[in-house]
Length: 366
Image (cartoon, rainbow, N blue to C red; front, side, top):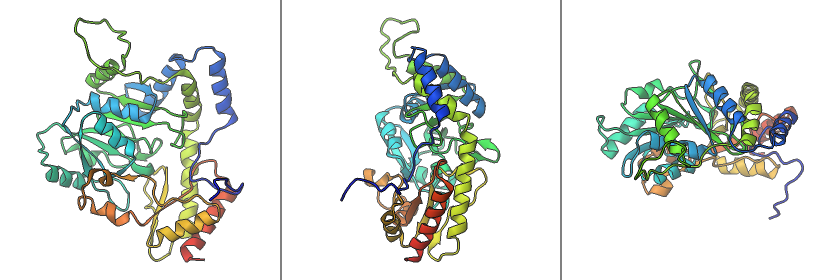
C-alpha cells in the first residue's frame, strides 16, 4: 500500500503553529544563545503562575519530568507504583527505569480515567497497606480532569500527570495544580507544544530541593568527597522555550477550539444504538475525542477509506506488557470499541464538518 497521502487527508492530530511562533523561535535563535537561559526561566515562571506552583523546571521531555517526579517522591527499586492500565507506554517506561514495581489500576469506561475505588482495589490486590509510602501516577487522561481530592484520603504520594490535559480544569482548578508534584508534556501533538519538552512543578520545598539536586548534572553545587549521586541533563533550552512561551499565550484559545469541535461531533453523532459518546464534563480539554462503538473496527476502516485518520487505539493497554490478565476488566471491555476522531485546534470549519458527516455515515454503515 502506498504511504503517499491524498491532499484531502485529515490527520488524527497535528500541532497548531503560527507565524507568531516562527517569529518567537527566530528571535531566540538570533540572540546567538541556545542553551538554558532567560527564556527558559520566563517559561517556567509563566506555567508556575498559571498553576499556582512555587517551583517549576522545564525539561527535555514529559518522560524526563515524570522520571524526576518519581525519584523526588522517593521511589526506590522494588517500590510499588500505581498507574493506570490504559495510558502512554512512556509512563510504564519511567516506572521501570526507577526500578519501581508497576501496579496497574483499572479505568472508568465512561471517562477512561482511574477512580479512587479502582485504586483501592489495586492496592488490595497488590497487598499495599495504607501505612506504606507508595506513589500514585494520577493521569488526567485524554483531556479529562479528575477530582484529585477524591484520591487524597488514600494516603498515597500523588504525582499528577497532566501530560495530555494541560489547560483542562476540575471545579475551577487547573489540572497540574494539585498533588505533591505535577508533570506536563509539550510533545508535538499535546495541548501545546515546544516540539519536545515537559515540565515538573511542586510547592513542596523538600521535593523542590530534590528536583534541583537531580537536575544538577554538572555538580554546580559545592561537591563533597564521595558524592556519587546520579543527576540528569534534563533541562530545556532557549529555542523550545521560546516556542513554549508563544504557545502558552494561546493555550486557552486552543482548549476553547477543541471544545467547540467536540461539541459539533457530539451534535452529529448522538442517538446511535451501540455508540457511547464522551461524557460532557465541565473543564474537559478534549485532547482526544474518543467514542465507543460496537462496530469500531469497521467504523475506523470506513473513515480511513475517505481520507480521515481515525484510530482504533490511542494509547497502550499496559497489562499486555505485564502479563496480568483479568485484573483490569474495564480496559478489556473497551479495547475493541475505541474510535478516536481527529481533533486539534487548526482543523478548519470545513474539515470539522467533513469529519462529523463522515463519522455519522461510517457509524450508519454507509
